[in-house]
Image 1 (tube, rainbow, N blue to C red):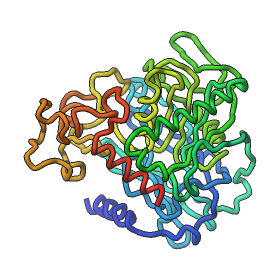
Image 2 (image 1 turned 135 degrees about the vertical axis):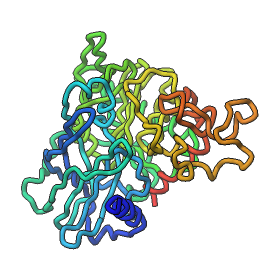
Image 3 (image 1 turned 30 degrees about the vertical axis):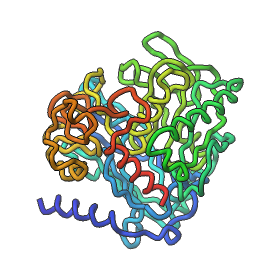
Image 4 (image 1 turned 120 degrees about the horizontal axis):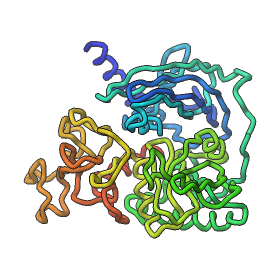
Length: 423
């Protein structure tokens, strides 16, 4: 118990520490690719390679994550002093796969990536995984000497980038890079027009439109050999640049990619905080994972909703609030633990969530009746479960197919994340 308390206090205290970017880092990125292997009950890490990337898209002020949302955490420490100089939390496709039936029956390996500012001196990188109680366990560490001549500097997938929207320098803005999948060379103009359209979707939605001056959006001109995307259940296989596919985890609408390395090689052609894959199809689908990547289809009638909904996951760590749709996961949220996401609660530690936003006369839990239709409350049902887990409003863009409909709790979480990246 003392050891656990120490770890909690450590991660709490560093959230308030300040790190001088210029003292420790250069204005470019170091990418560490690794392999994540395991099954439903356990995981291990192994090193793959180090790659120098030409841009640093993140803040130079907020180097220490203060949200603590993701399933994983990595810490960069100065080798000589042990001081924590960079920290981020994130989730991955592997963390979702662990909750599927397949993970109970076999072992799989996923290639994953962390990115941090390029260190001036030797650093230690520590990797942590959360258990089902959301307690962090150190799983792996790797020492990085920035003068190591095995750090790759070659650009294996070099393509032209273009500005879709620009407001400020990258360290003072949220940088989104949009990557096309299933757009051929003849469809690059369509991709550029689609990027403009989707930027419009983002800034049509609160609180993004009120913070438009804190975003940069980039596109990468990278064609695929074939148009469209894979649909395995229909035996449709397309040769596309980042190998997106429907039926991820055998869920028809779940559109993702396992090709992390190609995705990251392409993303490195621009500064980025968030990666968004735009897939050239009109079939309904998409997906997103916090601080990993997001996916949306280009031409479905619900594309605007899909885009903003999925970006809520990938950027702000928001959870799905629906509970009636089929998903591939088993017991995604333990009911005796407070969810990490800011827009769900099990009431285990509701003080840490949106309790401060509820009127004193609103009952907790809150009945789903007309009286409270537009009130922030605690409504049962969310996170793929009808009972035992609660959401902030009766409706929200994280619950239903609705545009510009984020509830006040989600808006606050998004605004806090925008400020974190743009300060």
